[in-house]
Length: 343
Image 1 (cartoon, rainbow, N blue to C red):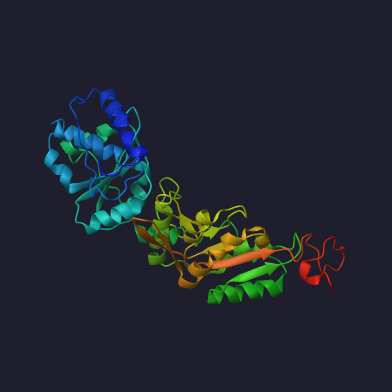
Image 2 (image 1 turned 120 degrees about the vertical axis):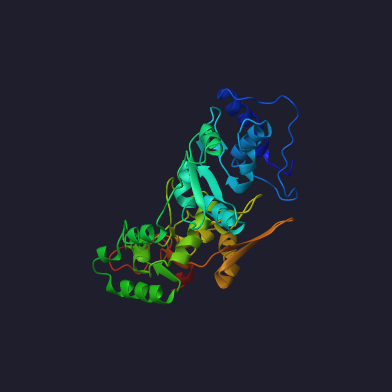
């Protein structure tokens, strides 16, 4: 009870199967699991593990059930008791530290992400038996330790693309350097093959490096959206997002039944690249107006309103006309742009 979605309701079958698969006792009486506060909708599979451990603690199958109140436990259960990764481990760890919990128990794939939070013991578990052994003997699992500043410093210089790879193009390179220095938006107009996308992909490499605070903020957004790779820590490089022109307005700015950050929030502290700008729907471009002015986007629903940060550089590219070769010194224009039809 407590406004669970379908994924939470289905946890009953996963919890029961995981408990029975490991030859533990699953009570056949009526079980009431209260997900408080009851007026906030609960979603996702991260409640599987705490529901299972709570059931085992209530049936005295854990030696020290009183210790459960000192820890935050999150994880998805498979049918055989293995623990699968969740989304949003970093914000959960930050909140657990703020509320004074002794430690956080998360799946092994999320441990390094959560361990970036100082003054909080983070324990990585792979199976429900690991959690039971921990509460029976708290020395069975050692806390995961991550040197946040060292990890952040080591990963900053590794780029897939580099601005120095571009030969020639001095005018546009100078324009992008000025845009990067001032955080200005830019639009690149030229024929196909001129290098618009190539230059845009390399723009993040000449932006100032992320500060540690910016890296934490960016990592939290990607963690909530489930975009962090397994066993990752901080996002140390400025994000570059390049959505396809068929994207919807909800996918771009965020939203949904349970509001999630969109592409403009995933590009926070980085670059949002809109390739083939005229191909984007008018409504999609219109909804970007307010977030670009306020550097944040507000998603409002009947029961909740959420603010997602959206401070990004917008880089767009387009052809000068439908065929792409208007004003080209060698190729003929097959279709003139509407602006130049009467010339």
